[in-house]
Image (cartoon, rainbow, N blue to C red):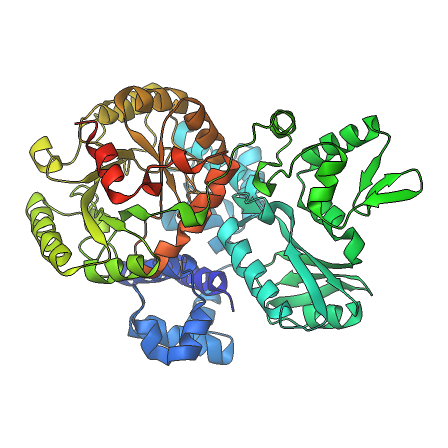
Amino acid sequence: MENSEFAKIFWNIAELLELKSGNPFKIRAYQKAAQNIENLSDSLAGLYKKGGRKALKELPGIGQAIADHIEELIKTGKIKKYESLVRQFPKGFIEMMQVPGIGPKTAFLLKKKLKIDSLAKLRRASAKGLLKGLPGFKEKKIENVKKGLALKARVKGRFLLSEADQYATAIVFELNKLKEIDQILPAGSYRRGQETVGDIDILVTSKKPEAVMDAFTKLPQVERTTAKGPTRSSVILRNGMQADIRVLPPENFGAAAHYFTGSKQHNILIREMAVKRGLKISEYGVMRGNKRLAGKTEAEIFQAVGLPFIPPELRQGTNEIELAKEGKLPRLIELADIRGDLHAHSNRSDGGNSIEEMAAAAEELGYEYLAMTDHSVSTRVAGGQTEKKLLKELADIDSINSRLKGIRILKGAEVDILPDGSLDFPDEILKQLDVVTASVHSNFKMPREKMTRRIIKALQNRYVNVLSHPTGRLISKREPYDVDIERVIKAARETGTYLEVNSYPDRLDLSDIHCRRAKAEGVLLSINTDAHAALQLRLMKYGIMTARRGWVEKNDVINTRPLAKLLKLLYAKR
């Protein structure tokens, strides 16, 4: 089982317990376990295989009961408690509760008053205006439900990049064990690093395609096979995602890699350039009449139309071809360029590991520095710290740093931006920090102008270094708050504040589009994980993918600098 499968079950248990008005501490425990599992960089099943229940209990948010459930699921394929809960409710209740604005009380009200017990029935009732007049369903509530339904419809059949990555990585790892495979490449929107992925395309070269087809359709990640042929097969994975594999002749591999990576608009533009040169480009290669000219590598495809290699993340069908012609493509940032993480949490707020454990994990990644940015007091649900507790943490960091040799812990805090734009801690506290990252964690539904002024006021504080997850979105779960991001970007430039690319898989915030706007305005970025556990420091790759789609280069990011230069940037605003 992949991590997303474990996480989905624990999310569902939490939802069902909430429907039953269960113990809020138990509900929160299941939610926290689901979130931590969802964002593990290592395989949960693999960790159990290596270290058993003991290895599970070392993970943040995994206590005895959750560890027992995981073990039961691995050994039997089911959890008795979960199956018992599921039988107590209509099948569609969980799906209904995943619509923003629909909680347990609302779900029961809809069932009682309108016999709505599924997402399909909720959509029909909303379209017919039947929600109007229900207790608690005022105009704003109805509008929020409509927006939630629209969001669900928009993301249907799409999966987070991180979930696609778990499956694609596992599939490639398993298939690479076959001696019959010479080359293998996952393509499509996954290769382009899109924030959500519809399906996974795997391209392979092999002299024995039958062996590849047999192995692919028998992978443990496969739920069922929908088509199996001599050189192409399709399967449905255990999470519901479709995966296709194609075995190609080596001479076609580059052409197929380009074609199946896309995007569609990019491919159209490349084909149009080919036509002007009397060529035809397809997944089979580059042709002039009946003569085949190229196709073994992607570089050959671009060379055929007079272009340098264009990285997959830039193949968006915007202006990448024009800039490639002019030799102006960016040299995109790489994961190896990152020297540290400026947004991470320890168990001093809602993290699962100690400061020392977080430091050790960062050092293992080769980082020079790690900022501990535990929550400020207003974020009570996340164990936000009082001034007294923060000062104690700062003193402890000094002590820890005195013992460390390979890495420096930076003193930081993730400080709430309050509704009026003021900050959760006064300046006399903030000035003692190396890194102040400011975030909106409340009042998400403020009007656009008010939200924009709120954020800009926070950026004007001389001690605020980074605006974290600037639009507050949760991909597939929550729309961004209504903010004029263009004005925020300009305010960041004017105040010397940096904007975060948050690598947490359901955030990826700033988006690729806003990354490119920030770069155009000369605003520097900070790519961070927002890690709440040591293993989550490895989520950095998803922020890198997003930044690459936003044309971001190494020098556009502050945490690619060595420590001394980073500190100058952090203190420059003061």
